[in-house]
Length: 133
Picture 1: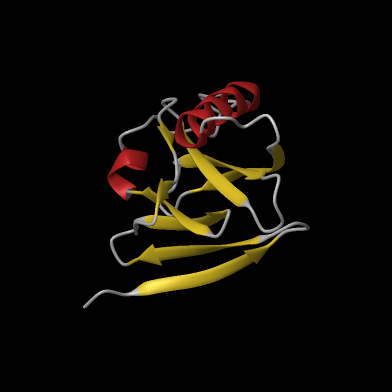
Picture 2 (picture 1 turned 60 degrees about the horizontal axis):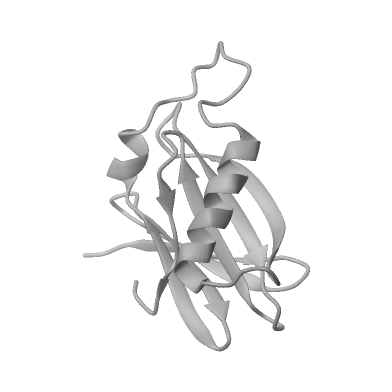
């Protein structure tokens, strides 16, 4: 049996849906020009990245580096991203203590266009893919 937790997140420009299954895989849905994009983040990918030790002031990947990596990943996914802008940067603790991910959300040029790119603490970027869960 597959169990999913569903949350819809609303921002000033658009909303996106977050699904988490029992195995801890997180799926974020984005939209661009009427197409759905899914960003699938397996728990094993997160737990294979470094932890953020509580005695360290900064995470293994800086915010600036995460934004650079996410922007590059979005460009590889969509092509031209000059009209996309950063909406949110969230440093999210994974359900497994000590593991963290960046969720960087971009707003697109058309109303309702929103994409979230996930950056792990080893610098691995997980970009949305067209129409797949």
